[in-house]
Image (cartoon, rainbow over all chains, first blue to last red; front, top):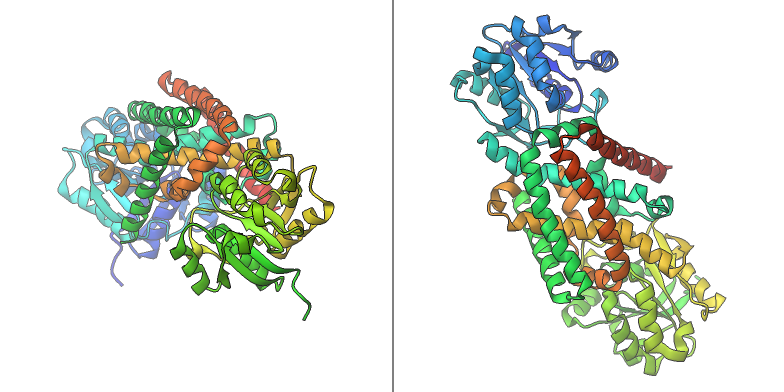
Length: 291
Length: 291
């Protein structure tokens, strides 16, 4: 039996994302001891009883780990790094799983100062509609994409270590520019989440919501699934990716207005063109995804 | 072996909805002979080779069936009934599977005149993102809800026969007023479909659509699944349910604007309230659905 790549890993926020990360590393035999830290003692105790973490740690203890994974809502990045910074081990590598990157990097720079090179930003593209340590599973990242947005200050060795960690989890790792990441994710992840939530809020506010909801079928089920995600986490994501979100919302509204005009004007040709464009794109996406 | 309840059933449009209906009736032993009619000869031949229909019929032949199921796009209701009306058997019952009811009933009244009592309007709440006879399956309606919106002119016996047909398919049948049906379905079925299509069209029109789509994950997959539905069918539904759709779009846009204002103003409390409302409603819906 070979020694694990990471003798000690600390995870801040042991929910679906952080818990699955350490579960996968453990399954791969690439971690020795796992420390958990976070704001919620009940959640940490649960994580420990599930065997996701070996011990609950203070920031001072966690800061000496070989690898620290930040898996709390992105708004907590600054405070978390601020708590870790004074005790940070010289060879400790920090990474994160935040859904936005430019804003996270700015927080990290402010909190870490000259130690910013120890922070390798990342983002696993994995479903997050379920939350908490109970939802964690070693297989979550199998065949999923993880995006790293390395900083000029990172060493190749540290970026390599984070890439390897994700590879042990079964993920495919790609590198991107942080801004390009944020705009792309605003489009294909954050905007759908906002729309699903906006739609669900609209429905539940309607006077006969109960009757409407009783008639909802499988299309509704799938369309609204992501609206069940953690409000706190998504509030942070929208805020953190504010500029890209505002661009996306404006562009989406233009197409919504276009569809409304077509329905109002009984312009069936325009309506069909819009629907055909959507259906063709969705079929094509499914096909490429399977390829 | 008892005789089937419906010696001859004719189905206009042998795709997912119509094909599954006759497949389920056949599996239940409640149909003798199944006739198919439609505009697409290839689709009809396919349906015959799959054993969904026993023969391809002219309107004149189909019009003498014991039960006729209209399962073509709702815009075809008037023309279809117009073609059947001159030959309609005196005891033939017609029903439909259209996603809108007020507009369908108006078309039926115009086409059938004094025979309108033979038309029992219906709507099975079942996924329709796959299309064509290949997608048909006897189990599609198992435990699904079917809404009937009976007319004052219907006989109790005819409504009972249509209700029984759906019950043989494994569905739960409820009665509603046509206008209430249309408003409720606009909200929980038609609006999500429009939003998914509008979103997908927005994405594919963006300059870096390919890169964005390559990063789309499971949230995107579920959110956009319904955008793959038949453009022709949904164009007809939106047009047919025009008034309810315009009401729903306006109300949805109000909530979208509210979310945009919150993001723009960095009003995290308002944003969280909106997201919490959505998440709570979605969790509650899932819970009640499972109960």
